[in-house]
Image (cartoon, rainbow, N blue to C red):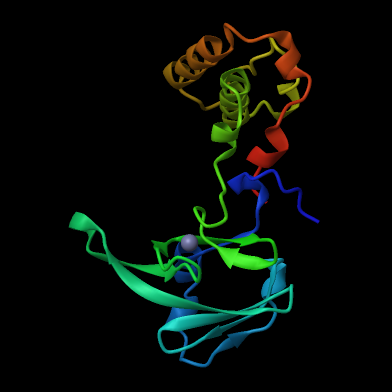
Length: 186
Ligand SMILES: [Zn+2]
C-alpha cells in the first residue's frame, strides 16, 4: 500500500505528456494496453477511444478520462486529460482512494507545502545535495557533497550557497528523519 500523506510525490499518477512521448496517442482508436501495471502500478488496462481514455484501475473500477485540447498561449494547443471529477484540464491524474483524481480534487500538495518552514528548508537542502550527487550524505548536517567531475565550479558554488542559506537556521533535529526517499523518482 502507498503511504497516504497527502503529498503528490507519494501518489501514483499518469501523465499525458509521457503518453504523448511514448506515442501512445498515435495508435488507432480501440487500441488497448493490458500490461500497463509495469509502468503505472495502479492501472491494469488502458483503452484509447475516440476522444477519451478508458482506464481500468487495480481497484476494479473503470474510469473514462476525456482528452481535451487546452490553449497554451504562444505554444499553441496542448493535449490534456480531463479530471473525471471536476472536468478541469490537467496534465496529470492521481490514484486517490482507489479512484482517479486531479491534484485539487485529491487534495494533494507538493511535499514542500505540507511541511513546516524548517522542514521545507531541509527538503531544499536535500534536493540540492541529490542534484550534486550526494545521496549518501543526506543524513548529515554538515556534509555537502564534493564537486563532481565535470560540474562547473560556479554551478557548484551556487548550489552550495543556496544550501547554506537554507540550512542556516535549521535545528539538527530535522536531519534525523529525512524525507529524501520521496525525491527519488519511482
Ligand atoms: Zn479534479
